[in-house]
Image (cartoon, rainbow, N blue to C red; front, side, top):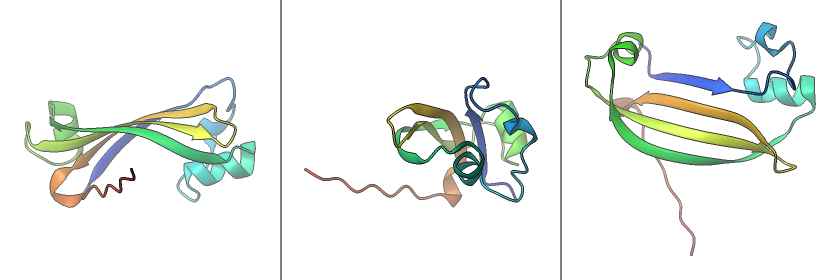
Length: 103
């Protein structure tokens, strides 16, 4: 049963050949580090709730309008450069968001 739908965007000019990488064997993050020398450091994320549209509902095997968690993120390298923009939709009944805050 599907539990998440994620879409990520990277600058094509900097990651030639990434579309043909074997991401079924290695994670995107591991591939970026191993093949491109990019070490990811941190992400800025925005989380909200949204109803599943027809497309997401079909892919996540949910009724249209079911509640989803939507996470938009920008992931940065250790040099502070934005590398990945991503949007993820997560089944709310199968995900828990943990937040730690400091003063």
